[in-house]
Structure formats: C-alpha cells, structure tokens
Amino acid sequence: MEYSHVTHEDFGPEYDEKSRILILGSVPSVKSRELAFYYGHPQNRFWRVLYLLKKRGCLETQTSSEQGKETEQRAEDTGNEDTGKKVKAGVKMAEGARERDKGAGKKAEVATAPPVSWARSADQEASLRETFPDFPWSREEKRHFLHTNRIAAWDTISECDIKGSSDASIKNVIPSDIPMLLAACPIRVILCNGASSYRYFQKYLTPLLDDFYRERPGSRRVPVRQVPSTSPANAAWSLEDLTGTWEQAIVESFR
Image (cartoon, rainbow, N blue to C red; front, top):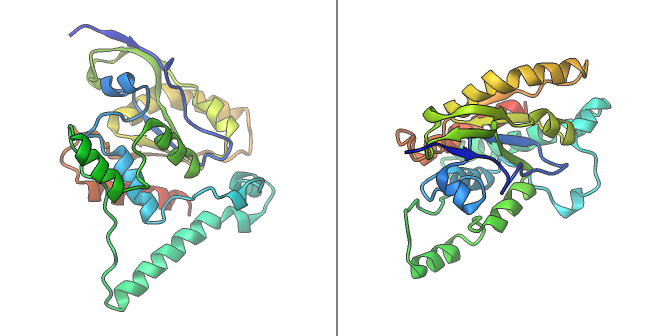
C-alpha cells in the first residue's frame, strides 16, 4: 500500500465558544476521510461511548436557558467558585442517586446503544433509528451532539503521510494548532483517544503547550488524559468497559 498525504481540509476542528471537553484522535481513518467527519468507521465505538455517557448524565448539556451565561472557566478566573463547580455538583448528584438506588436494593436502569455493525439494510436502519431516536446517526446530528454537549473533536495530527489507516506508518507529521483552540474556548480536559493519539500529543504538542502556558502566567494548565481507544482494533475492551473508563476520566477532571 502506498502512502497518502492526509490533511483536515474537508473537516477541521469541531468546537465552539462553549466547548469544555476536547477529544483528540491521531489522524482520520480512511472511512472518516471518505465521510469527511470524525470516527466514520461503522465499528468504531466513539459515538456509542458518547451516547452512553450522555445517558449516564456525565456530559453537561448546553440548554437554551444557559445561553449568554458566563462559562465555568471565566467564573474560575474571577473567583466565582459556585459556577465553577456546577459540573462537579451534577456528577456528585448522579453518583449519589446511583448509590441510593444501590443501597435500597434497586436495580439501576442500564442504558443501551445501537449495536455495532458493518452494514445494515434500509429496514434495519429505520428500525434502529426508531429505537434510538436521539442517537447521532448523520454527520449533522453528530455535529449537533458535540456542540450540545460541549464537546470539541479534533486530532493531534493536522497533516501527515500515512498508509491507509495504519498509525504505525505515519510520517512527516504537522501537529494540530491545539493552543489556538485552548485560547478560543474554556476546555477543562483533553482526552486522547488511544495510545497513538497520546504518544503524538506528547511528542509534538506538549512543547507547543509549554510555550502557550509560559506566555500566559497564572493560567490553568488543562489536564491531558489517555483513554482507551474506541477503534475496532481495540477489541479487548468492551463497550461497557470503554464507557466506564471514559466516564471516570471526565469525572476526575472536573473534581
């Protein structure tokens, strides 16, 4: 297989001024490049993990009533701890409810996500859409899901040469401008989706961010966490295990 030069010309970083969680892959897969959006492989569990995190109450939803309010980051910068602890309080309430149900001997309702499949018939697709009406199926639904839940999506690598979807073949790397994104929105945690994303982050982006924070003395350094890859190649991890580990990384970052 020959090398291809991959860029983000067809789809760049997905974020807005409310984004609080930044999720980074390494570089778009062949399928993602075909669909011009993140995590397009039908067996990649990224969207299912986010869907389950939302069902568990782990994501902070942007509602119409919150439009125009100060972001948590701005509140922290001005010493407003009450607003700055909003997510933490919400997580604690959810955890408390689960513990109360457990203590009372109740069986907690388990959220489910659409099954992973290579291909489905039109009838199967229609049935799944009816069963999971709030799951982000289309590109526009996925974009809306990210923005509504204050999630930014990008990759550690802006451009590179790669064979197919093989991270091991990556060369001639140009890193993404993560400092630009951090300056544009109140990111509270960076999640690197898989070992490759984290490795390239440490190699190429940590030095850039060191300069970024040096130019902003007193600013809060955003924690960077590696979470297990949602790729189908990471078959050793079940959907439930993936979701639980991602949830823990998010909860710990907002404490």
